[in-house]
Image (cartoon, rainbow, N blue to C red; front, side, top):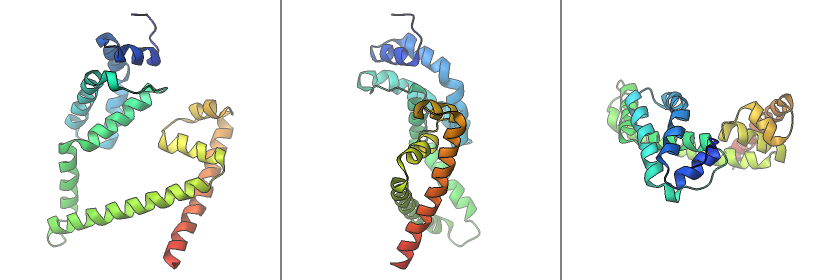
Length: 193
């Protein structure tokens, strides 16, 4: 095993079966994963279980892991997916909706209907947003995706786009402004038709 401790090297070593590489990645990112998980759910037990399940799965399915240029982003996204699929998380989300609706008739029936409606609205809005995103100029689209879909900070975006930090902020600001206009346009068109 080499002494190279870059994320990319550790990822390759993990794929070859190195428990030391797995442990190093765990030590390197566990605190950040924990803080990120706590933003998704306030239930610490779900966050901790999901982190441990994530690393167990990484080792268990190591031969099927895809290559990645950003191990941290891969881990954060994988953790989010673990938490969202956790049965306890789903149960807690449903209970929160029931609690919020307890004053409005039969909470269970209304909550399920509201969840279905909310899901349909979310899917419709996501579709409109993607259509609006595709209307943006290439640089603005890239900046918005890097910032809000890939969760990169302005310094990383500046490096990727080969611009200075202030320019990356301006590109994203203009992208959001254009995105708002395009999104509203799609909403108006759908309301008229």
